[in-house]
Length: 135
Image (tube, rainbow, N blue to C red; front, side, top):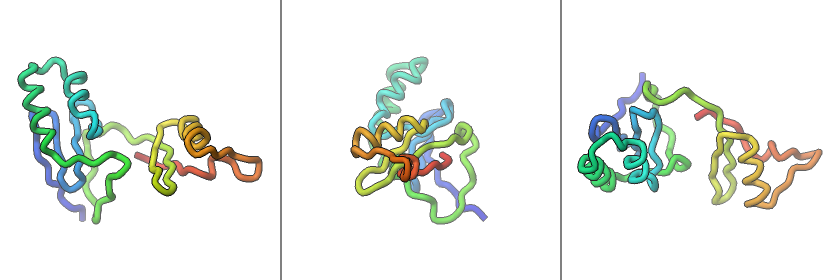
């Protein structure tokens, strides 16, 4: 049995899920990063009138949004989001205050090397420092 998701529709293509504090664009099949809402709406939906885009942005500014790296898992199973794009592998590094994810193995390795000054060795490869997951 899956829990119900409560959704608030914003315009014709944005959905806000209060329980998860996420904003989803059903047209482009993905979540919108909180710091990028204005830029996203203006750049990705230029076919919409400027007045309507301004209204959408104003509505979104009043929402409580969580960064993708801080989204909490559901307390009970929920139905999948049908319109989100296909699942893909991501690489996650979560140590102390750093919680970051990348789509490519090379990106996560570079982050660990440059930001944390950690190098892999023959006995402890760098890939032991991150985990691969599905997003």
